[in-house]
Amino acid sequence: AQGTWVTELMRKDKVKPDAYTFTTLLDACVKAAEEDELGGLGEAMIVLREMEGAGVRANVVTFNCLIGACCKSSRKHGLTMVEKGVKILEMMKESGVRPNSASFNTLISACAEAAAGSTSSKAAGAA
Image (cartoon, rainbow, N blue to C red; front, side, top):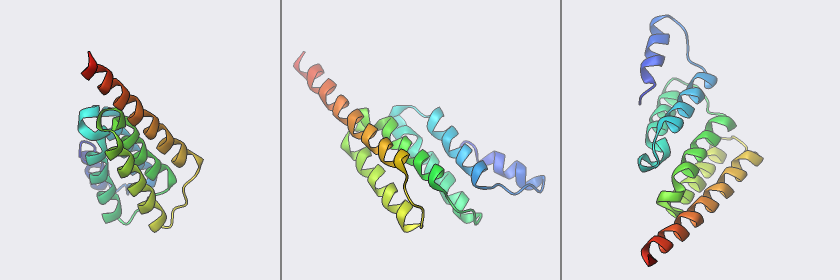
């Protein structure tokens, strides 16, 4: 992932990355990604695996960032990304992290984006 070099630099300087560090890296992956890249979800999942490997527990903000990646690309990739968001929500619960209103609001936004993308695709096909 694009930000993993930061965690390596931190380790060399004897600074242990924490949940805030990893969540910031996740957010950077999502913000830097294009819609074609599934909203940065692939890169963000690599960071999540690194986070877990470092023994750092993901929190609600971490998972909401992952759901946000699904929302970002749901206009282009449709309900597939909404389904990925729901799977992340389930992963969140299985990890013992309780979703909050932002978790569900982001999923609602993903549904709206998927619907908007579907509508614009139909309109483009009719033209």
